[in-house]
Image 1: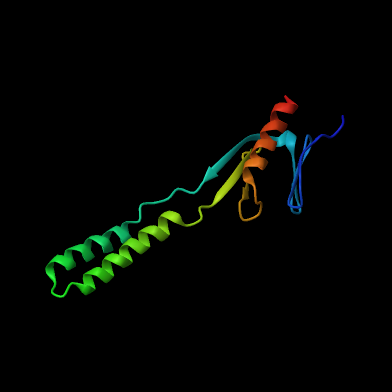
Image 2: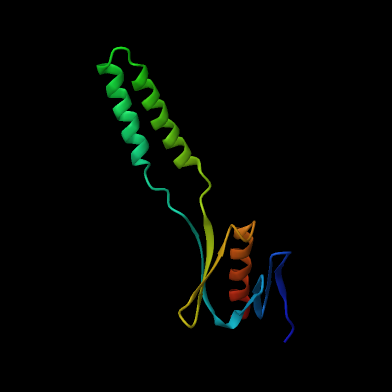
Amino acid sequence: MEEHVFLENDDILITSTRLVVGNKTIAISSVCSVELDREEIKPPWIGIAFTLIGLIMIFLLNPPSIGWIITFLGVLIIIIVLFRNRKEAVIIELLSGENEYISNEKIENLQSVFTAINDVIIFRG
């Protein structure tokens, strides 16, 4: 059977028979399922607490400058937490029950990897 190439670049090779990432090779026949997942963003509770404490201090203290500083720090923490770079990964479940992870730290475009592995699964029938 001829080997069809679905994705090939410097980081990864996905064909109809194998998946090669770095120095690791996985047989496509052992791939059970594939999933694209992203890290969840947890609510920035510490930033919210700083902001609320700062706002209370603005109204209670005279002069309110320390309250403004704490409020600013709280808002800054909230912005940093909400807009930081989230981790993504393609999770490949194998027939053995093991999971293989391909993260966005290793591969630039995970969506193309996810699509290529789905195409291989459909191709093999």
